Length: 428
Image (cartoon, rainbow, N blue to C red; front, side, top):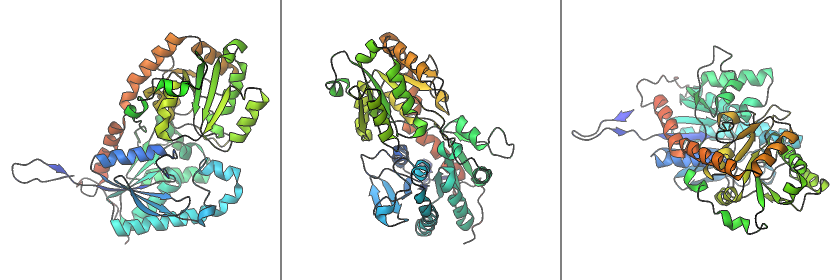
């Protein structure tokens, strides 16, 4: 775990070479796809850990350095037809376009082959698989082929969706065979079966983090120049997919009192499969003049949006597939931006938002209750300020440097350089 220094010197940490296996990763500096993974990778790199990321390509594949992180993008289909991994996410993409199922076997084969090539070439100390299926399952295979220890992290969609007998067995199989597994909230770990099955190892609950410095640096006046003076602004940021509950938010906006609605604007930031339907609904309720759809916005520009908003709404629900919020990183971004949060009590959200203390929680699938809560908060500036101040105090515990430190501790526990780690003998 630690190397011996020359006599009289200090003990130094052995360098670690970690290979992250992911199903999506930002394709550019502006891209928001799984942007939390980029922040984690860079935070670990700043701690002296050599991070490599294996992720699907959308267009051309290949390898490149992104700051101090080596990113390898594998192709799994003709480049213009690779539509499985990005956009709304794998499961929503499959629901929208069932023909994409023909890409799934090639996706799995190409990810496995690319992982094997990287293991042979770089000999990583360990593999960190993000999402249990399919990345965790592929990492378990690599563990038994090459003896490489693995840590598997559940983020939410992998825990809540794909609720068949086979998929549930596969999830638990991956968890049992991993050297360590983590989840972003306790709710996520319980969805895998921990707490109900005595055979499952205990997870390490490590939430994804937030760049507090970045999201607290927003300029409130920059975007508000586009609004009438004294206008109230409600903000939504997220993928426009079923589990985000954005339709309920639009309906709730239409239900607030006419006088308040006349001086309240709703901004929707993000894109996804439900974008067209949501725009049509906004037109149908006659609110298109007061509701603006921004589309996808660079992560680096979001602080100004949070700063401009008077209220940040997270109206998430449980989708028909069972998918819901594992944690809700946007909550932390809003906390850091000192924006009052109104959210629904689903998934792991209630482990982040404490009702009446750092935000307001209400039941999902209830636009009228959502409208009532919006009216209450928009009409009480002092209440919004108190909740936002408390949220900002809480968010400091979610800084990326703290999250990266916790993951490094786990890495070193299972690293081959740790004499107490128990490794599987490789087949090759």
